[in-house]
Image (cartoon, rainbow, N blue to C red):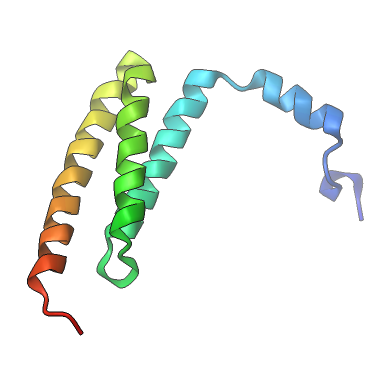
Length: 97
């Protein structure tokens, strides 16, 4: 195994973490939670409890986001809330199996 393919040392990991900006990590994390929420709302993988939790996490992160990303994530939250309402309403309309 070449050195470029080797696992990073703890020191290398710490050094890379020092370079990370918290604001960038918040935006990345928000994007991940949005993707999770959309995935949990998809009919084939629907899990409304997990979707609701991911949406709630996003709502909690919005005030912490950099100004330039806040509006976009707020729009994503609004879209997710509408999709959740549609999914929850559709679940209530279906007869039990």
